[in-house]
Length: 329
Image (cartoon, rainbow, N blue to C red; front, side, top):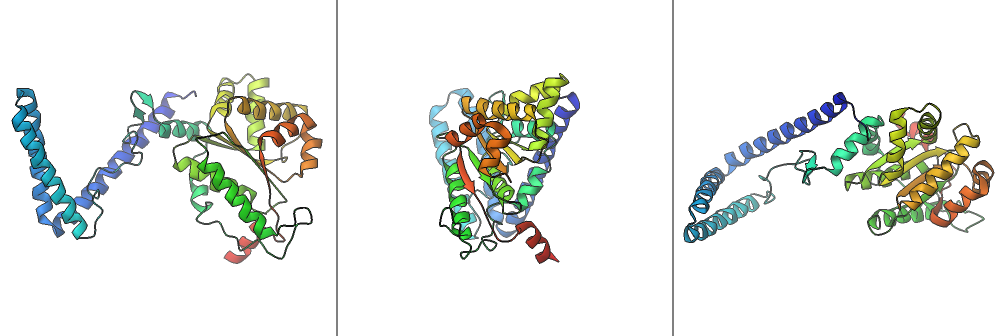
C-alpha cells in the first residue's frame, strides 16, 4: 500500500508517542508500588545488577557461576511476584507496557511490518482514523436487545424480532471465533435502523482487537475508489484495489445507497468474486431485500453471495437510530 514520506513519518511518530506514553505509565506504576512496598525497589535493583553480572560471566565462560546466578535471579523474581500479589497487584504489574505486545510498539516484527502497522497504513490511506472512535461506542459491550420485541414475529421464519437478533449475534460470534480456520462472509439485510451497521461494527471491532486488518467503506466510498482506478487511472486508487482484495476483512456498509449502474454491478461482482477466490472474508450490510439485490446487481452476483455468505435478516418495529436519539434527549 503506497505511503508518502509524510504519512510514514506520522505513523512512526505515533509509535514514538505510544512508547513515551507507556513508559510514563510504567514509571507511575513503579513510583506507586515502590512507595507501598520499598522492598520491591531493592529487588529490581538487585535483578538489574545481577543481569549485568550474568552477561559478564557468560562472556568469561564461567558456567558454574552463571547457573548459581540464575537461581538467585529466580528467587528474586518469585519474591517480587509474592510481594505484588500480597498487595493485590497483578504479578506482571511492573512489566513493560505495550499497546501491541507482538512488536513491542516498534511497528516491526522480525524485519517485517507488524499487523498493527498494516492497520495503521489502512487507517492513514483510507482516512479511517475515526473508525476507532465509532467502534468504541458500537461494540458487543454496548449492543442491546431492548429494541427487539419477542411479540414481533416474522411470517416467513416464525421467529420473533428478538430471537432473530439473538441468532444474528450468535452467527457473528461464530464468524469471529472461526476467522482463522475458515473464511466466512456475512450479508446483513433489513430495513433502515434495525441494527445492521451496528452489528457489522461489533464484529469489525473484535477482529481489529485481535490484530486483523479491516477496511471499512460505505458502498459509495468503495465504488468511488474503484472508479478512480478504472477511469482516472489514479495510481493510489489502483494500488488500493489490491488492498481491498487482500485485507483480512472488508466491510461494505449500506450497499444500494450508491448510484447503481452497469459499472457498480460489474465491480461488486469483481469484489465479491475476487475476495472469495483469495479466501478473504467480507461483511455486506444493505437495506435492500433479497429480490432487490437480484434486480440491482444481477443473478450472477446474487448467486455468489447466496453460495458463500451467511444471510442475516434483522427486523424491528422501531427505527433504532431514531429511538436512541429520543432516549438521549
